[in-house]
Image 1 (cartoon, rainbow, N blue to C red):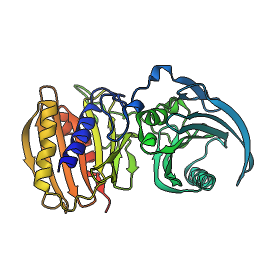
Image 2 (image 1 turned 90 degrees about the vertical axis):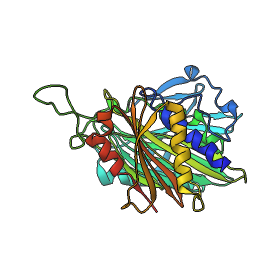
Image 3 (image 1 turned 30 degrees about the vertical axis):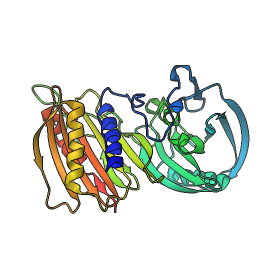
Image 4 (image 1 turned 135 degrees about the vertical axis):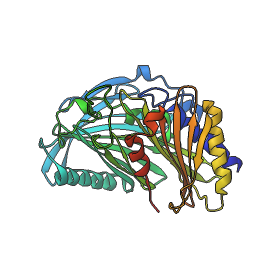
Amino acid sequence: MKIFNCWLACLLIFCLNSFAQEGDFLREDIIPLSVPKDFQAFDTSKWVQSSVPTANIGYKFPVPPSFEEKQIYNSKGIQKIQSASYTDLVFNLNYNVQYRALSSGMKGKEIDAVFNEEIQRLSINFGGYPTIKKRIGGASYEEMYLEISFKPDKILRCRLIYAQGSLINFYIVGTAPAIFSLPTSYFLDNISGLETTPSASSNSTSNPTVSKKKKGKEKPTAKILTWVKFTSKEFNAEYPYKPQEKIYKIEDGNANFYYSKNYFTRLSGRNLSMVGSVSTKDYSYANPETQFVIAIDKIRQETGAVIESEKTFSYIRFNNREYILKSKKDFYRIRLYLTPAGFFQVMVKGSLEEINSPDADYFIQNFKIND
């Protein structure tokens, strides 16, 4: 119980703080468990900014990287790959950016084929196998998040991006816990210029559009937002645009590891934030009532909010509870699920009108647990 409470506190603090300000993803006051504090003591202001010349996409390295050029043979014949890399010998992390030119205007199955070929190439090169694959579509780019596990106990975390006729591969190789530390997430998250490139496969915009009333303020509805399908091993969801991700690897008292995975976004120009989270631990013997009380009490303590309402949905086959909380500034609508495979949390935060809006309903109702 004590271990669960510790995890739950970290998860809920993260979820609440991730709403603090738009774009605030790396909160140095939120330290993942089992990750040494040395990993958090990095000054991102000194990271070196560079860019992919052919696609005008920016990225950052801790220090100036090494550059090289080589050729590979694939279905397109011999192609040139340009790469930038840096190896952190202290924490045994290898940062890489690789890019090669492709045909412009590729769509759908063409992009899928390119991604699958690149995944196969990485798997063969590192002698491993993919454990996580998530396909994400942006307004002006297409993307896949990937993790490959290989011996000895190493993991490759990767973002494959097709934009403006180029395939860009951002990846890090290392072992736990370093591979899940804040510097690695900073490297993968701080990729700029994606939404400024010409549309590669979609005519939609990543920023939610709004409909205008004849009188009064603009009010968005779920029907006109461009929702992006999000898929993970544990759940499927839909977000107004690609969510940000934070994964914690947590060690329990028996030297076993499990993951706390958090995916969140905030609508630009609106007081509405959304987050979906899961802890992938065996909860088959946990008491649902106890876990729900612990979760909601922690949120009340962190926000100073009071419970406005509480209800259970009998038609949902998992143990569940939905709460409405009110703080001085905001309202929280939180739905919790306890399953044998994990503890799930779906949360929206904003004004009373926003958390009961069609967009909030759509997000919560389209959160599907995989079992």
